[in-house]
Image (cartoon, rainbow, N blue to C red; front, side, top):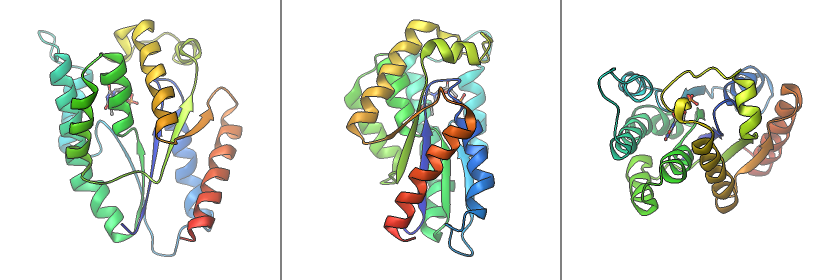
Length: 213
Ligand code: TMP
């Protein structure tokens, strides 16, 4: 595919959204993007109208019900399939660049390590949902579970965040192990936001000058 696809992963409160916003301002002015290339900022769950509805159901389900772990897994996969088909793939085929706040690594970490669901099933669903779209770079913003809580000032925003520290520790381990296996770029998210942004800029600059696009 002609474009570039960059993904940000990490536990809740790691600062992905802040760093994506920094890139949204910097990349178009960086001179790295060829003329006429658009930058799409998107997220999972969400990124499409259908995905936004799924996001709401996943994070704030109706009071009298809660998705079973397997249902949750299938909903994240459905969200991803729609997101890839409707947004990511068409953009990359045009040569545009896409930055996504979370992608399939989150399912491995949260549903695989966090919920303990079957990893083989998770990988099968990943193949189906991602439709051969693979990120050029995945940035893993590494932050301790303790710091994640402090950053979020102990406020629980949604059903997944309400799972508690043991769940989040398993998820964090999931990111750490997946980062090794998949050659993700680990960025310590415990520094000041400007320094984190600088680290990300440097990685992108190196990657993009080597690939000459
Ligand atoms: P966000 O708060 O980073 O937007 O993500 C929403 C929540 O959804 C977050 O707690 C992580 C969770 N999640 C999963 O459990 N599995 C997934 O595949 C994705 C994309 C997100």
